[in-house]
Length: 144
Image (cartoon, rainbow, N blue to C red; front, side, top):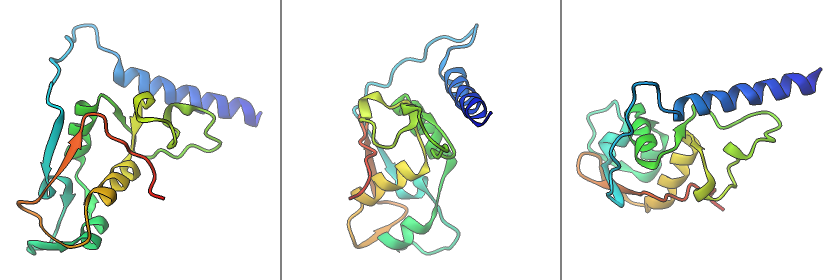
């Protein structure tokens, strides 16, 4: 019984991913953005509530991620954004965190945070002008 519920939950998850990625009846394929990099201001990445303009790396990493960024990244990378990449038992490799970037179908908030943690060096950042570059073939790998 548990195994059937497990298979059903994975089938539903894969169906949701497929439904998001498949074109609808009247959809046309969007023109590809051929830019190799996407440069984004920190103010577009993080949701900040104070009027402070300067943040340390640690302060930035504690802020929430802007959902508009996840939508932009999803379109730019051609990957589906999932609120959580945790699935109990995770036999499905579609969202395995150790899969190589070329085979990934999905990404999540921890993936973005891992990438940002590797890109931002210790120091102070001006949230309105400092930027982060997201390459088209982004490695979301874990931090060791």
